[in-house]
Image 1 (tube, one colour):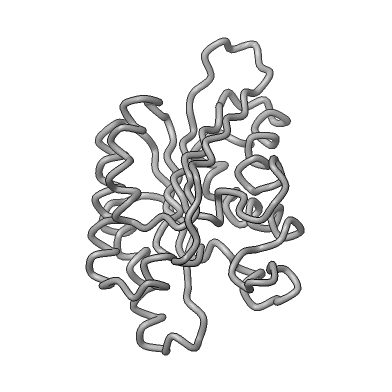
Image 2 (tube, rainbow, N blue to C red):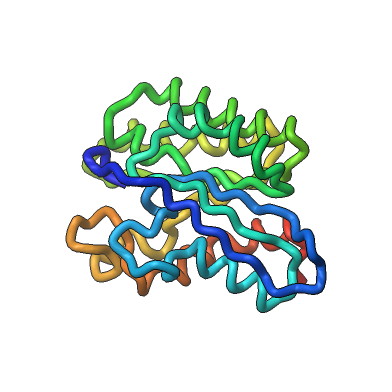
Length: 206
């Protein structure tokens, strides 16, 4: 997720082995937290999501359009083409952390998040926003403003929200790679479990 990190698109797709020949698309638009940075291929939370959907026989194909180092501005720029190409039924937006790490204006981050949510909704997709929080060293006021931006967008646009994507993980150093930014493989199931209560409702999980 670090600003200095850049990488190629991790656009893996997981096709569930279901009777339905045309599963609906579930698009994940995120940064390195969703792009398996530093992890073995197939071990990230998005890949685990694909496996869970298959296990529960839910007719969805996961498209991971996450890029390490991505910002909300970058995500907004890419989203229109992704929506047109994949026509997803569900969109998960996991962006914003790199904006804060780069010191980008919070107002711009919030505007970009809102624009992405609006675009996803306009396309007919159900939308889930994954919220983030910053470490205490960024200052209490800044951290509170950053975290609240996700809630404001979710409330104003009436979309589902996970308040803190890394809940239960963020304060456990042993669950992070050496850079202390990217969660380890051990943390990935926990990340999925943080997302699942809200996402499960959107995909019809029981």
